[in-house]
Length: 373
Image (cartoon, rainbow, N blue to C red):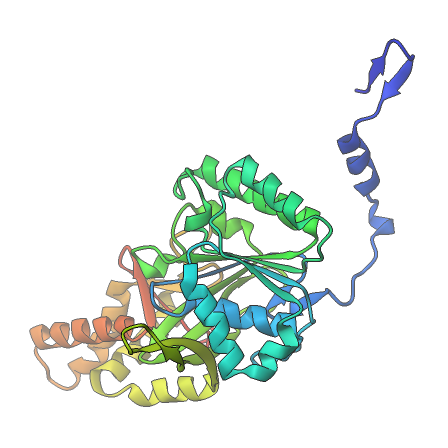
């Protein structure tokens, strides 16, 4: 209800009320948006929040910096169209090492650097985006500067005194991220770590994953690194980008040793899948096929759970073992030997990023088995 200024006899307007009233739209007035503005087509929309996560030393910062430079340059990334945009990268834990990564791009990919340098800025400073003061300071400092993409690397170093596992703290942090996104009119990319159980996704409270529009997991397969879209609110999921890290020598340090950093070297994701298939031999191949059939026959989708991937089938490990045993029983192999072979294959498939498990339930990581259907 509007209040009155008694001295003037007029209503005191509430800006928030006016904003809500203006935004209230009838179904008959809703227009279809045929083309959603994007930063990286099929991967990142402009007005959205994304979460990039993975274990330590899997190349998260190199990956996000590569994406950011391609966006600033307006150059295709992973074969996808890119809208040239203004980028600010909050390098909360990069320190002097982050400057080396930029120098590596300048030396290793000079054409990309030259195309991006006017649109890319970084802030090598730790901010507390859980608290109000730094959020206001950041927005004031940016002012009218155009920003289309803001990278927060990492979430943990930008969380201040908040607790990642506390729902109230996560909500407060996400409220501030939403405020930054709304006031700047930009995409916000958060860089984060996986939990101790990699199969459960990003570390911390489940509210974080629920709030983001895009979720990208980074994993390592030997020297190969793989980025996979695990969640897309409004886009097709299951996109994959494979890459390796290319070492760039920048000079020598005071001791005469090489000073180096890395750049991203794109690889063929389809070839990666083919090479993984070729690796499947013996009991590993039998276990892989047994899991496929167990998921098909007895698998189910787990809803409303932070522990399992949404839209994917999972199955109890016993059902998987039963399928495996059926395939080995005809070989006249003893039960103990079958159990040992299954355990080894089960561990191998998880160690080589074919499967993930939680609470004795199992699922495939890749979308190739089409368990999302």
